[in-house]
Amino acid sequence: MSNFLGSHAINMDAKGRLAIPAKVREELAQACGGRIVLTANADEERCLLVYPEPEWEILRPKIEALPNMNRAARRLQRLILGNAAPMELDGAGRILVPPTLRSYAHLEKKLMLIGQGKKLELWSEERWFAWLDESTDDDDMPPEMEALSL
Amino acid sequence: MSNFLGSHAINMDAKGRLAIPAKVREELAQACGGRIVLTANADEERCLLVYPEPEWEILRPKIEALPNMNRAARRLQRLILGNAAPMELDGAGRILVPPTLRSYAHLEKKLMLIGQGKKLELWSEERWFAWLDESTDDDDMPPEMEALSL
DNA sequence: AAAAAAAACCACTAAAAACCACTTTTTCCC
DNA sequence: GGGAAAAAGTGGTTTTTAGTGGTTTTTTTT
Image (cartoon, rainbow over all chains, first blue to last red; front, side, top):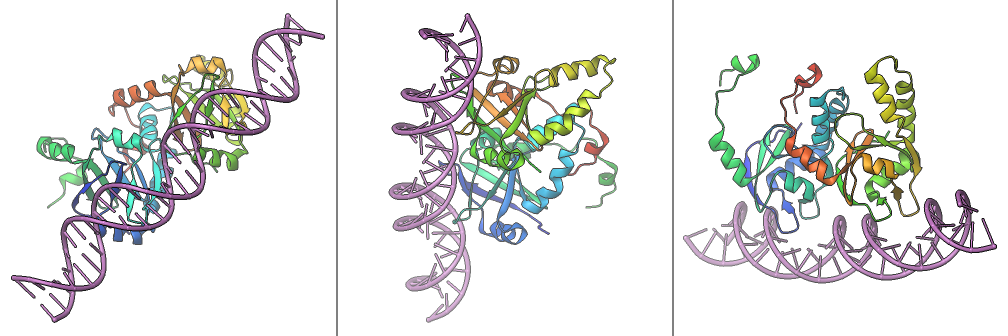
């Protein structure tokens, strides 16, 4: 199973194409043969999520099964399913980010790709560094987190 | 079974015709041979729902069977059943949206078609982006959703 | 029977995807 | 440490396919 770590600075060209760093490309090749699903993040941070296809196929049914008479569930379904774009890396190891997703996450030229274990996050570089500066550690923790010893 | 994903920007022409994107068209072809049912959405968002006919035939009896001494149930029946329009894609892969539904969902020229697993949602582009900006993640979640790990 | 509206058909334009070539950076060997 | 070779990243070009708009034919209504 894939285990993405670390952050990579990458550039998107004028057509919305972006070259996946070689090291990440290798991991993607063995995790899913280069078949990925790109979608929107549902929390307040407007970044994109990159799932290897097998990981996506674990998550998708869970989201589809949510009771959609509930408003929060509908929102998650619209964001995650409604923005999901399956794709494959092109011959040069690049992906084309759909315009909708580009504007959702405010992606311009300079981006950051952040390893998050089973998935990756794709941020506008500006927003990533702004988040680093702004985010604080004074929110409530779930019990599993309270018990951690780093 | 069909599995609609992603969002597509589409234009409706002066005659109320709209071209289904090629990828969606393929999925519709195999799910229902292009036979779909278009109807109104029942929640607060004024969008339309697009069901492949077999999916519709699973949903329809459930709605018809609701105890309609209840006001919420009557509302659902009137909206969903009372606006349902069965149709087929034309030779160029387009559908003609009935005027009633067009005005219900405030559809003008620019539209968004949103994949939602077993069905699709059809929005006015303006309303879709407004919803994206306005919707927040502070509604109450069902327990299945609280337990999710994206 | 004529006129209007709707549906099917056909042709043209535009956009997306695949392909190819060049430049820059990194790594390995001398 | 320097040079060469290979790999990675970048940009442009071509080809194919999807979308758009107009035209004709058929059906329905008055």
